[in-house]
Image (cartoon, rainbow, N blue to C red; front, side):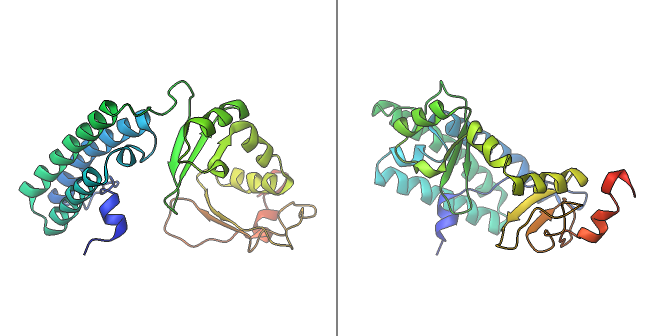
Length: 227
């Protein structure tokens, strides 16, 4: 039986490497076509919103077709895989037409925005100003208000002293990515170096396969530009 995630999400494009076989190369190449189609739908209607604008019967057919795509990939059946990708692309066009015919309102195209599906499946929207955030709240009732943010608000969050310490750490490792942030009651400004209290609070990923906790003693070497 297909999982909830399998039904609702088609396979994503992955980065190829030198060891990729011909099947993997073919799959990833075809998935780019599907991902581009979905991206266009998301820009027009909102992140993962188009599927919610059609009837339950149509949505079920869409998810069934997506499951066939996963099954074809698992079986490494090239003919069925190619057919399933093409069917999914046609399905997006069909959903778009149905939503248009039903008079559904596209996403607010006059407001530049970034929409992001979070790990919990909900959608986050980032706009420029608080006024734009309010406009999105009025036009996109399916998005929780606490997931709509403006750059003004994000700037205020980044100005917090704790986040400023995170920024200092990130500056030391230009390729680092913040993957979790769990400030505790022990989270302080950090003394001379500004790094003393970060040993267990942050998790970074710098695109290498390694587990890494910030080492405040090692960071001391970088203070005032020393190595």
